[in-house]
Amino acid sequence: MAAAVHKITADFYEDSYALIALHSSMEDYAMVYALNLFLKSNFKRSSEDLDISEHISFPIFEWKDDANDRFWTLITNNSLQEANLLIPVIICCQSMQRSIIS
Image 1 (cartoon, rainbow, N blue to C red):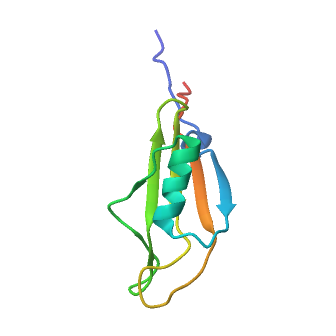
Image 2: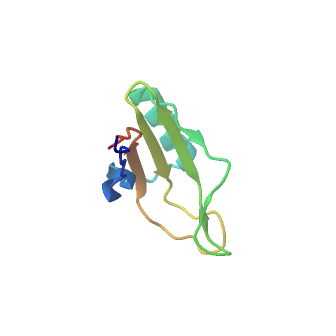
């Protein structure tokens, strides 16, 4: 009797995501409040910021959408520290679905 061989392919680890960019003059907390209010989302400030360097970091807001099996990440458009860089607000939606291939 031969033993079954199970392999995990390289695409098992690939994350499926969509990238959306918004441009606004609103403060990050106001943008998140408006998104939560009108889209019925539940973005919350992450306990850790996105650190680009020692002097530059960006606030992150996250939402785990269990109903649609998605994880949303919002990165705001202003850095918190010395170099006040401007970038668009970036929202990333990542599917939490995984498939097991045998």
